[in-house]
Image (cartoon, rainbow over the protein chains, first blue to last red):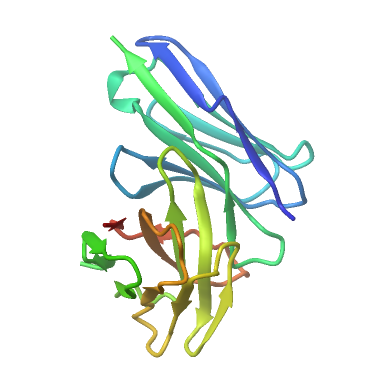
Length: 111
Length: 115
């Protein structure tokens, strides 16, 4: 059974600071997704990582994938309040079709 | 505009009542999914369908039923057998191919409350 663990689960940070969210998973996969969820809203796709060493960047967020370590990171650079949300990683099982989600990291960026 | 719609946005259920949540997509996606999200929790897979007239149980299928008679539609019924149905329900779809990748796109959600 595929297990996906995120840490930290809660993150409070000041504007302008940098931080990294980690996503570990338990079985072989080279397809990983990051989503953002605002309070009371649905999930919005952020990044699709499809191979070992993949790196994607959008604004102040950068995601990477290390399939050998079964680890993905979501790095936040110079955080701003608008980044406050819950971030989920999801891993596609080797057999395809279904995703297993982490518990989510609730990020709060304080002025 | 292409997308996924869910209705209703809010739904209230009485004890012992079955209710059906609607999910429609016009993205021409083959695969569709239903997830349940409890407050402060991640997403748990209820059912998924990779093709019309076929579907598979996810991790928490007990007390739920689905149908997939049309490619565009994947309704979820919450039956009276589901003892704790209060949650946020999310529908998603994807192209379903394992050749490329399986990015899922989500509808706006239905918030179900048991009275």
